[in-house]
Image 1 (spheres, rainbow, N blue to C red):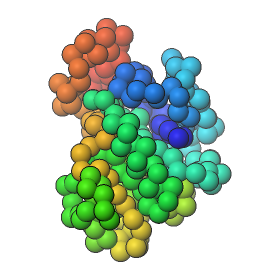
Image 2: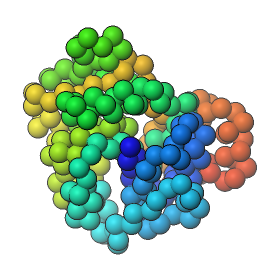
Image 3: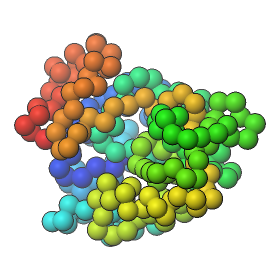
Length: 229
């Protein structure tokens, strides 16, 4: 499976922590096709991650740039997309990842690996006891929570010049009642915290990270200062 970590120049400071926790908490991640989609290349990228630079980031700091849209236009198979501030706090349920990926290969447009769908109106998906289906009327069906996407579905929401937030908010109405299947497990598969809040480092989730891992991250300078983000 292609695993895409998307970042931009203002948020490169989150990448070391993302890489570290992904390696520690996702068994077998080094066997996946892991791509860092970036503009400037951060230092210390592990050798199991391939770097795909999109060139010079525009002054507008838009997320959906021409080069990003061009990159996704070439993809033909489902991919997992995660933003750089979604730090893994617990082990990934890799068996569930495989099940959800298979469903996107078949009929689903998107499989959310967070707990988003469980907090919204949903129903059981077909005969699967552990898979739930997001209601067509819900907001943020196109949200950028860590998810496996059908390339065709993802491309429907890419508009040049938008931020990641605009991708969600401006595409939200289009995603409502579109008839597409958006699913997740009842339990969170990719247990993460959003460590960027309004442009600052969000310390709230640090207590959920294993203490030994947190100590190592602190020692290696992977925890950003609030003022430096």
